[in-house]
Image 1 (tube, rainbow, N blue to C red):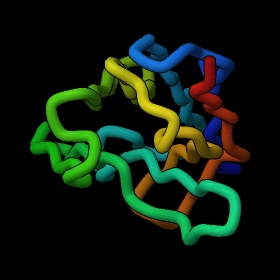
Image 2 (cartoon, helix red, strand yellow):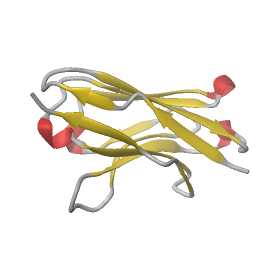
Image 3 (tube, rainbow, N blue to C red):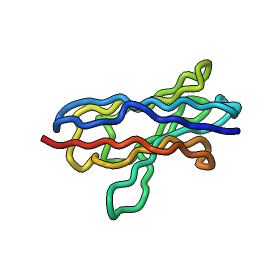
Image 4 (spheres, helix red, strand yellow):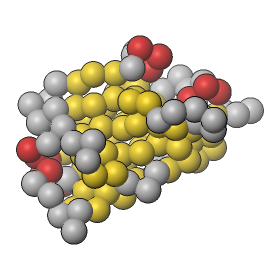
Length: 112
């Protein structure tokens, strides 16, 4: 059974930082592209960042230069370091593997 479990969300002030973590189990983690999506209230779920099995990364334009995705295959972990957070980053963040398996999400709220 595949499981993806996110952690690290919370409330942070504008300009602050958070690090999201996602622990995977039940899959050959190293084979898959993994990533983070987010969904804000009233909006569609959107890609934030992805990292391939070879370590290639892609980001949505709005987070380039602020967010960094990384993975540790031996631990079956994927991370999202989020810096210079803005109010518009507020959303539920979802971890995904191959865009087939999804976590339950973790809330990120950026507010003063």
